[in-house]
Image 1 (tube, helix red, strand yellow):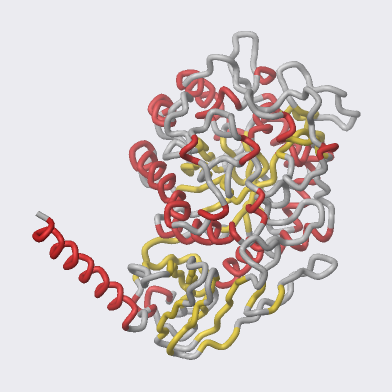
Image 2 (cartoon, rainbow, N blue to C red):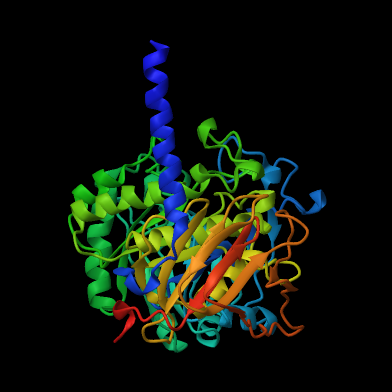
Length: 523
């Protein structure tokens, strides 16, 4: 039997090798890349957790001093978690000029103020001191001054404001029906201070309502009843506000077997109604949330952070929710309104160059599938943040976000099968008719790879001379750093002649090809 099978295996292997060699043998043809999708001008966006605005318990950075964590018998957010996974934090200073300048470099963007805590946050609609403890049925208090800070931050940084609505027991009448009283007050006050809420989800991650502050026994029918009050209220009170939904998380993989409310059931019960279909996506959960009931197969290590499986998980979730969108809300835009390295604050390596590969690949992969917005969690809280919350130093993924903003236009191109050993993504070059921008990711940790370019361009290579676990990153060999006041320096490319483009091990290279002459990139 072996004498007959082996030649077939060898033949198949030979064909595969020849195909790989052929893929590398000629230059790529960016001028011929076909336009396949369009993304929002605010495609690269971010989250600020509601608990950052109000203050309260949030995921404790792994580097945190144990004395600052919420231990000593504190009740964890999720049953079964170590209370030391969280720490008390003071409200985020949204007036900090350094933070504002760093956020401005990410504009235009959507700034989503939401998260699990938003589901049970009480808006204290008065200029009097807030209550010392939240009113019954709520878990936190948002003051006028805090929300005004959100509005002012959004204005200063070219960010369009997105949020979600409180749905906890405190928002309900005697019969248990959700009432829009809190939302009405928030909308009115936002208008009073010259702000505008651009879009909102009804509530954060309704498929896990049991841990999100919803009343006990909450199900798809209850969601439909509540949404049946929310939607007509919004259409009358704020007709320009775009309704997002359902904003569920993980049903394509991470929480596929979780005994929550299925989005399919909620969508079937509500019928069409949203302006934008939204979903959340995390490849896994962080170490601090081990024991919360998430299946062990979701585990992730820094060593596997560049693996094909890990990098492709974002597509698993996207395809799951795109299929639901096509079934229940056909033709509607789809946004990824919350995502990060892992849920529950990220792993220790989420703050390092290691996670920049996932972040960049996620942007490229979901854009190619038609997802129009990606809101990264968070701007500046815990380990998965783009900016270190204590030092306000940009992390490696921040610099990738800035480069994406400056180079990658809103038209998405099909770059075809990636050449062997790299992952290749393409958009039209921002601000350059006919130009093409590439992102070329070399996930090989030790191998230098090559790509043949047909025209000259400019390259912007992100790499680290001190390893993947570095909190710093270099651009074309020079260290990247913001100014003392948060000013982002000019990010200059290096000349890249036509011919061989060398890709150093474990690197991410943006390439601007102004002369690509792609007809799909012209007005």
